[in-house]
Image 1 (cartoon, rainbow, N blue to C red):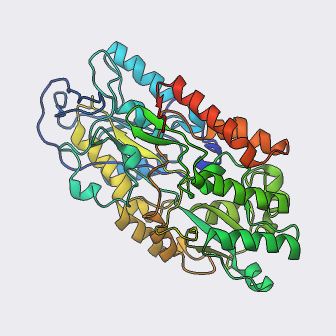
Image 2: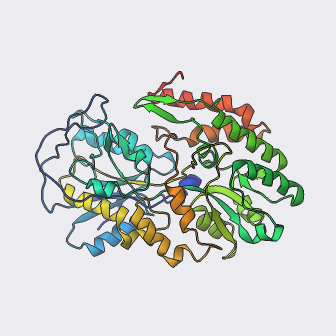
Length: 460
């Protein structure tokens, strides 16, 4: 096994420090023939995937980031007969386009494609489309005789949505980061507060905290992924694909304005901070003042335990909040990586086996740092005492419930949802503007970025 290229562990903005681990793999391979794949009317997916000529036992090249490297090494150790060349690269962290640029180069030269890659959901938006002169998409459609449908059906509800295009599945999800309501049970008990179940109760409690315990916080919107915890959870149609190349962006929708109004009131009361939880100063000076935090499943270990150093036995998780009058509950998702298999691979059997093992095997997923997307693996993860012993209560029920509540209307697009939030919204808040008055500028920024990468904006 060899490793080259520079590794960039980074913090994959706040979201990626944790939404790690990979995906992957498949099961059996059918057929082998040398032919190009055709595409459907949307130009996204093959009408009938036809692999290149297969070479049984040929080595596979795997591109993974440094965080996923140990899992790949674990597979290699348990499958010594599989020949693997492992390349460590940035894993598309921080919006990197390194993978896409390399694939475009390989398309031009006709060789060099890795067999398996770890990346972000954004990578799927280009990898599921024809990328070279041969009109062949880089990612292989895993649902076409590569991964059994029964395996794909075992992932949490909606978790494979970022992997899908044109009716086919082009990746396997390693982990998800369903949003839940985190709270410091010790402080809540000490102050005599009840854990809210609705957003209205959350707002009322935040206003009460500001008066009765000034300095304590019920949330932050200052990180580059805060919009995913709050506006995604409110089912705000900020990034809603209504067609393969048509995006609906409507921040005037009541699901957007209600969240902006709620947060504005708590920002004004100073119980929600505009300072990022992951800023260096906050972790050092403010971590012990966080009473509640609406955020991803990895907040428990990576925010409260690692960053804030809150002692074990204090932090607990509650189910995602609902709005009074809503008939269905929904939540957001803040992270989660994907594994893709190359359509150019000459050993699809080994490639899909690796990806399937990485994403579904209890051997690796039970000890994964973040919550597995594959339901049986998630159950093994929850049964691991290492994933439970830090918390004040059992998180199993809350995590499992929230995993199936992620709203699929916040779509996987060809551009990051963090860019406009970071470049427009956060500076406006720092300047003293409200979220409500910043929504039009946020919408304009999203639309401009969407158009720049080829989207048509839905008029209604």
